[in-house]
Image (cartoon, rainbow, N blue to C red):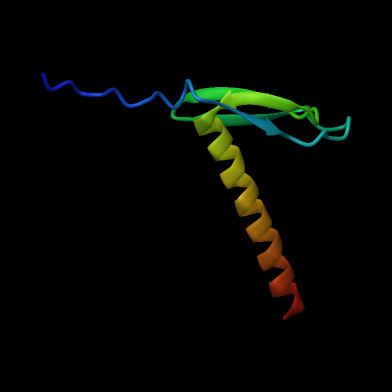
Amino acid sequence: MNEMKKAPDPWQDMVEITLPRRPSSEQNFQFVAVNDRRFQVPCTGAPVAVPRPVYEALCNAQTLRDYAAMRKEELSRG
């Protein structure tokens, strides 16, 4: 018989990420929302397991912050 294979659920695929520790004057977690699912990922400097979509959102956010900082520096030079 022709059976359809189920695609793996990305929310079940856990990935480790380490967010740097923040100063005590700031929140010690990073808020992330993906497709109406909300997470608070601790910023402890220790590895934490998160679902793959959360991991990807955090990585994309860091990439965009790095790009924005680079562009800001380029533009300030003239």
